[in-house]
Image (cartoon, rainbow, N blue to C red):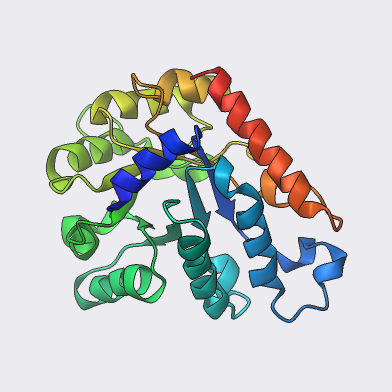
Length: 270
């Protein structure tokens, strides 16, 4: 099953548009995990097992593992998700973008080493930098478009022939780069009206929407501007608000409650 089919099935099976970002920060882990030499894996696995039936995807952030020398934990975590929760796709949040042999190595890293179902990438270097990802027709390629951070407008909002650059990116992906139907776009919840412009440009293409939770994105506005006609089309990402909802031995219960609350809030506006 390719990424888009798995995502569509997860939307329906779990009645959820929630994507849980797995951004481990050991300093914020519950105290009882402090003595565990494999705490990053143990923490993330516990979050996954507590929330898997409430989500449409998981999104581990590679830097949060690599900064602690925990790439092996990331490999095992993705393998665990596939084995214990088959059908829940995994997005490697790596924001890769380079040319030639380097791009091919980044694609192999994401899909062959880590076993991710999709990866986030940067379109700044153009089509050839993403071709090794796009050619993996069973995998998802999630392209930065209008990011949730305040500084995203420095370049993404620049006029590009009568339209902002982010919209030109969306149009180009939909028109030229999505030949295999495996593309999606990153569009931040913090800019709901711009999210709507992207949706109008790309039809039913899936959108990964960060910025809910700690960044303050508005769920109602995201659904109003970004959902497709059938009430799907979105992967609404939340990381810290779910991961660190609790700080005691019951942290998994708190994470599950936070994920359920977000899912139910989203569903009220679908």
